[in-house]
Every structure is written in C-alpha cells, then in structure tokens.
Image 1: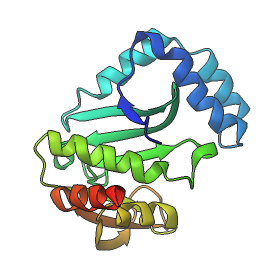
Image 2 (image 1 turned 90 degrees about the vertical axis):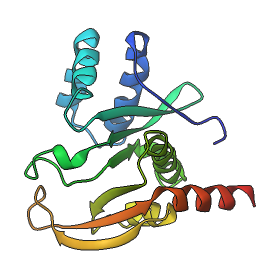
Image 3 (image 1 turned 60 degrees about the vertical axis):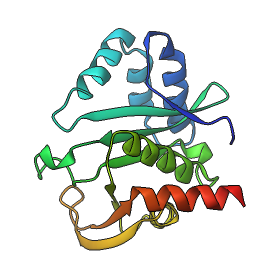
Length: 183
C-alpha cells in the first residue's frame, strides 16, 4: 500500500476510469444496463462534467486513489460544504468510495487519511464526515482517522435511515495516523 496516491483525472484516463466502474459491475454492484451506458460514454464529455462539478460553490475537489496504475477509490472533498443547500448535501467535507473488490483491506482508512492531508494543505483545521448508521465499516474508518461522533440524526437523503456525523480535528488526525504508521 506504499504506492498509493490521489490523482485528478485527465484526458488519458478513460480506460482507468472504465476499469474502476467495471469492478462495480463485475461484483454485482452495478446493473448491466448502467455498465453498458458507462462503456459508451463520451470521455471528453464526462471529463468536462467532472471538471464542471469541481467549480461548485463548495470548492469541490475530486480525486481518485491510484495503486499500481489502477483506480482503487474516489474521494470528494468540499472545502466549503456549508455553502451547499441543506436539502442536497449533508454538510460533510469528505465523502469517499472504494471499489468492491478492495473493501475491508485498509484502503478506506488510507483514502480518508490522504483526503485529510488535502484538507490540511487547503488550510482547514477540522472536517465533518458522515456515514449511514448501519455502515459499520465506514464508522470504524472515520474513528480510526480521529473522528469524534457529534450526532446521529435522520438522514435527509435516505428516508428511514440514520446518519452519523463525525468531527475530525486535522492536526490530531494526522499526528495519530503518522504515529500509528511509524511504529
């Protein structure tokens, strides 16, 4: 896992991007209909859409976690999530996703750590990260990165579900992660 890094997509990354989504299809996490749409997508158009998303008022940054020339995950970092409408966003600075074939192998903790580093570079002192209350894996990842539970409330987007919201103090998280990995 030493060769992991975050990358923004560019013109030559279509095959890398398709392989990422193919993992969801092959593991049963994407329908055949959606997979067929992904294969026929206009890459310049999709890349333009991604770059347009990043120009949002929340100062969104989208990175992909790369290992050995393969996309392992994706992370969205909103530097100013408070500027987004409450009915469209849960207030989190960070949301992330790991491909199904690489889950439960430490990649979630690593992508969140790298995202926290990006937030530190941008001058943030703390971040908010949320997950579904039933998502035990995500709760553990957030807590491993220094997340302190601040609330459990009804989720505005998944009706009938509860949302756990954590606060992470960046300096504390980075120190904790670095000391854990240098031991």
